[in-house]
Length: 116
Image (cartoon, rainbow, N blue to C red; front, top):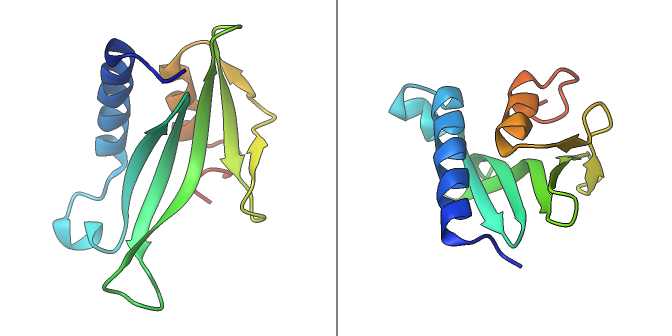
């Protein structure tokens, strides 16, 4: 079941604020490196955007972090995208009670799993 309008609005507000703090300040740099997100079903993915090295006119998105809300337990499961391009549970902090907790874990990135 997808998020309702109120849930989506709260998530978008939090993630937009989070990404604005991380984004490069200069517009010129943002063309070379920027951050974004997408909401799919019960998941929110944080992404890194860069020009494709094969065709700099195209932009590629690289998934960095994902939180999936599990309604039955009212928890956010936290995942990171390993080199095998598969989602893996972030073992140091596998769950969060609140979405903002997930963002704090990603922001700290203690083990350099999300942003490298």
